[in-house]
Amino acid sequence: MLTDSFHVIDPRFADYVMGNVHVEKLYTGCRWAEGPVYVGDGRFLLWSDIPNNRIMRWDETDGSVSVFRQPSNNSNGHTRDRQGRLVSCEHQGRRVTRTEYDGTISVLADNYQGKRLNSPNDVVVKSDGSVWFTDPPYGILSEYEGDQAESEIGASYVYRIDGDSGALSVVAEDFDKPNGLAFSPDESVLYIADTGASHDPDGPRHIRALDVSGDGRNLSNSRVLATCDVGLFDGFRCDTDGNIWSSAGDGVHCYLPDGTLIGKILVPEVVANVTFGGVKKNRLFICGTTSLYSVYLNRRGA
Image (tube, rainbow, N blue to C red; front, side, top):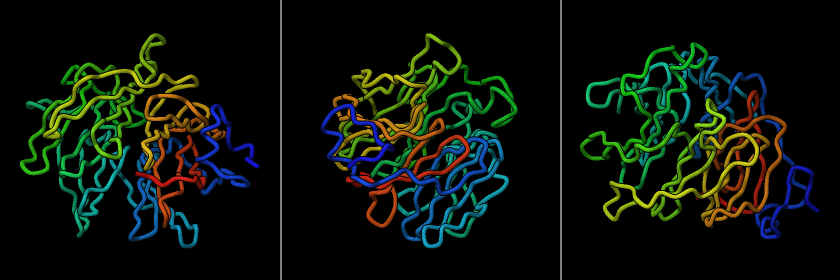
């Protein structure tokens, strides 16, 4: 029997969740929890507490929580590259960085055509080593999550950093406030959230799907996949079936690859981002506003 942690909208959702499973609160004490990334070889999770200017670390072996990095330049989204290195978006630094094996930090991108980036938000790494990230202005809109400033670029783009040359290129320029992003399991589609409604009631609150070109360098055929019915989409991940598990105002929403909403994981706080982890990659870690949560699912992360 399903617990009250789950809301079934379509019967197909029952195949992805399990009875007697609850959402668990692992930690609380953040101001705005974001950007989770699971480190399987160390069995720990890192996530950002943006206003508190720190990266937190949760240890899966004993449940302990510690500060991984402070200050963090108001880091937001994180991922790992194909060599296991931490790749981070920094609001205050207005850059995308990589933490090397020895702990030093390399800058992957901090400007476009000589103009400073806005405040990189979320990031994914493709199998060819390219780094894709969104650059809305949230970190420069106030002093709360970065340093208030005017946008030098004057727009919010989605970028690609070439894995070989390091060259930075714009892959999508028609978003209001591009936010979370993730590839489909076969990397043929890139999903990107637009949270323009955060500052404009009539702005977008949807996830778009864009086809990835055969050479993996460009996007086309942009279409709205799903529109958020509670709050806004932010960060999200795909499972091995290609379903999308997205943050929202009332928890985590699960969509089929065709955009059908089939169910929700109910969380008592606004959710900003999620990631799959655990030994079997079947544990969804959830960044609520002040807290870190998790729940076991009947699918693995892609």
